[in-house]
Image (cartoon, rainbow, N blue to C red; front, side, top):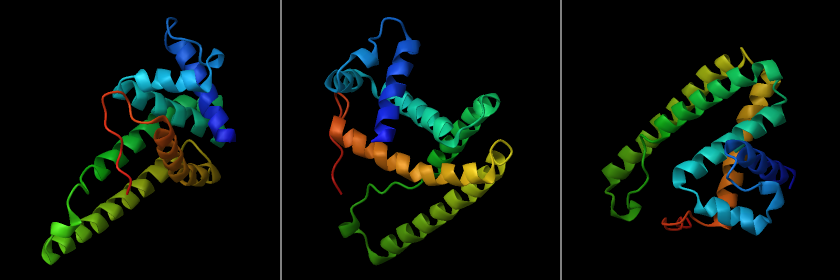
Length: 170
């Protein structure tokens, strides 16, 4: 609940400073906010969510003001590198139609990519340690999974952006 309030406050703050012509989120009802976000382009929504996640990380980790800009840059770099690795593996295949050999190949590929993600995480942990304390880095990595879950939960509540089909339930 506390994180939800932070997200809403961030959305309001972000939207107020982003452009004068946009409505004030603090003056909007939750339904109005949802509808306004639903009207955004996928790129705008993505940027809004990334900015919200970054601001929440800064707040939750209590990153000192003088280190916040370096942290934002490094976090963005880390998330992009993780995304690049994840995009190498697409699970948009029919598992039922795979031969045993194809399924084994996909399984091994998923293990290889998992190892790449872990190796990347280790590299960035060292980089984050130049800005943050070890406790903050640990908290950042723990927070990463929780944020993903919260955003997915939030997306399900809000529904897909206009012109986009709903995500299938697993």
